[in-house]
Image 1 (tube, rainbow, N blue to C red):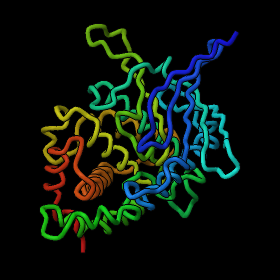
Image 2: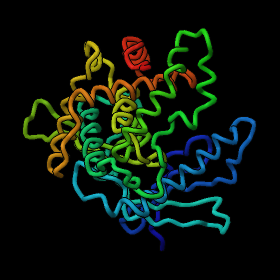
Image 3: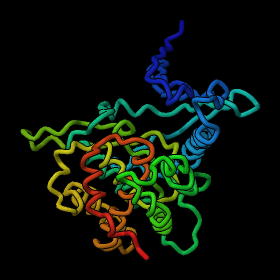
Image 4: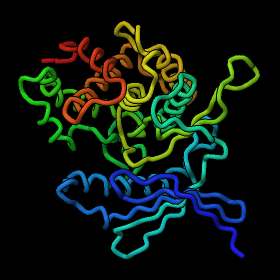
Length: 328
């Protein structure tokens, strides 16, 4: 008599497969089934976009295969681990990832906007992840081999079409003018491994904070979906999370500076973790500059692809920076 139960959790972006939770004799795993043959390029899926997506799934499997065993087991740096990876056919046109299920310890998810306690937990996770992978930039290899040479899915080298779509004479044409400069700066600031798609939907959370009971600990976070992980500027992850997934109520009133929760729940733990490794953290001015340029880079992509997330806040912040990072 079999005890195996299968529950579909979600379908993958653009029809590339499915995500299932499989329970067998009390043990639960998450199975990510990726079928690249049924998602071949069509008029609705340009060849470049399809190639990027195919590469992203192979990056994800390499990250889980090589990296999760090297990430320390600690509550502020949880990722799926112990993957079983199979290629159902010899052509490598499909693959299956069998991963530990994080839901029992991290049962909460917020696919849209994060409450402030969960936003802070996600920022603390990013701080721990970045600090763990931080390298001194002296021609060293990538923090994690065989992942993207440049993390995130919106970096300029793969987004020529979106750059063209900004259009001359539009309100945001100045973002196109500065795009290559900012991309070069972010590449030069690639001091760590970035998650690359650190939005609300890719975080899970532990217990919810109960402000009425000080004995209840703050929520903890775990991250999933490492398709776009690679070397990068750490503030690219931070800007993306803030710009897409944080309640805008907690972003207003920053007056051109970093939002308070970024300072308190990302920069402070990041600097503490770097010092614990014997690494001198970047200065506050440097981190501010990284944040600003990363935000302009994200706004550049949004201006060509289409705006979503905390649009008003991103547009206002970017407009306030117009001319500041134009350079010679």
